[in-house]
Image (cartoon, rainbow, N blue to C red):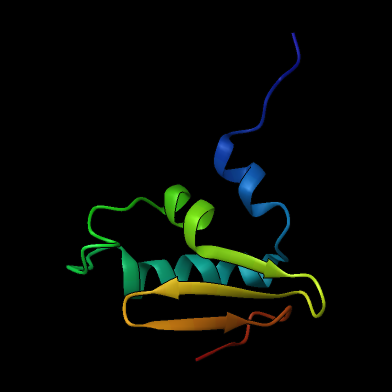
Length: 80
């Protein structure tokens, strides 16, 4: 039987290691305990699936958090 990776690894595989670290940090700061109705009680995997998009032209990740969007560069630098 083929061993499967956990589902969260599948969704993070397209991001660089610094981007993955930034995603975790941003989730902890902005999403995990949010009272915003679109993000309330949302887990990390669900957030990555629904609100994190890899932009193919420059490999930047755009993430949606309550009341703003954050861009994450390949080196992990995040900016609004």
